[in-house]
Amino acid sequence: MNKKLINILGLTGVISLLSYTAAVVFSPLAYHGYDWLSQAVSDLSASDAPSRILWQQLAAFYNVCSVVCVTCAAVYVSGNKTGTKLFRLGIYLFTVMNWISHVGYTMFPLDNSGKKIESFQEIMHIVITVPVVLLSIVSLTMLIISGFKKSGIRSLGVWAAAALAMMFIGSVGSAVLPQAYFGLMERFNLFSAVGFNAVLGIYLFTEFGKAHIQAD
Image (tube, rainbow, N blue to C red):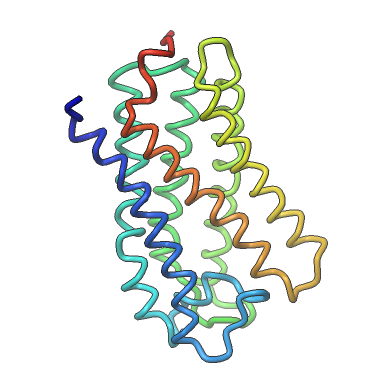
């Protein structure tokens, strides 16, 4: 079956995940003393981080492909009236979250890696996190609810539930575990969103199983 370009672009979600994973795994090699168990991933791309250049190189595809993937998914479900209104709204909000995350964290990277949040730029970095987290929770919840409706995409609802569960594990873990494990718990949060983006890209590539769902 011939695929349309917009469906082929769903594969950018997988490329995004691979690029992000490479950046998270290999950037610490350029940061002597970095402790992935306790330090945030954003420390690797901070303005003064010795790993900043390597991070930018490894995450180059992530920076572009993550936004391309979700935007194409939003355009596709809108144009084809895929699924229910709740389902489409969930996709739209997840797309907005990705745009806010990409633009916000690019504009306001951390000034100092591994240090206290003090400057305006660092405060804004934290402020951006609020809508990113809220939109992630709301959008994934919508996709879970719509996925388990009679006309929904149940398998995508299961993936959304898994992503939301990872997010809560990361949030609760960060709150209750010692600071020495903050970095580990944060990675649950980050990979929940990046991973679900890749899943969404695969569904876009397969046209969301359009023969098996009903629109409203």
